[in-house]
Length: 127
Image 1 (tube, rainbow, N blue to C red):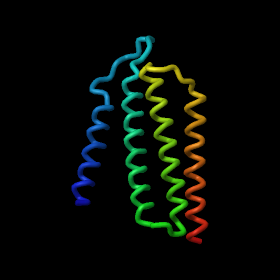
Image 2 (cartoon, rainbow, N blue to C red; image 1 turned 135 degrees about the horizontal axis):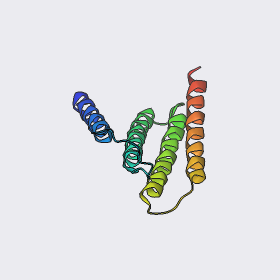
Image 3 (cartoon, helix red, strand yellow; image 1 turned 120 degrees about the horizontal axis):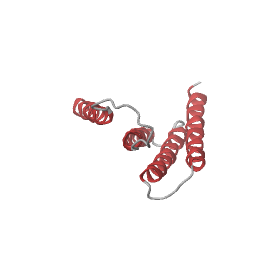
Image 4 (spheres, one colour; image 1 turned 90 degrees about the horizontal axis):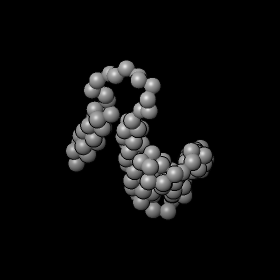
């Protein structure tokens, strides 16, 4: 079962990477560039964060209220915050709503701070 999941993840990463890689090189004409590569990169980041969230929730479910459970719960919450940040960034890039870069960076800062707190708690429990 794990080898199937590993192959599926590897296939998804390879497929996404090949979709982002340009087929041809073009000279810069000075005009506005297409945001397609940024949107695809944002989508890949969103997918990777979702995978991290699923893994963190699975580890949290295995702990069943042990000493490390609160740290993994914080990590899960941080990945939810990072998913929200990437979703807001994609909404801005797609032109659905106008959201400032500062708002996205602030949400990312909160998410990364929660990751740092979770890792610090894991380190504290394990030391």
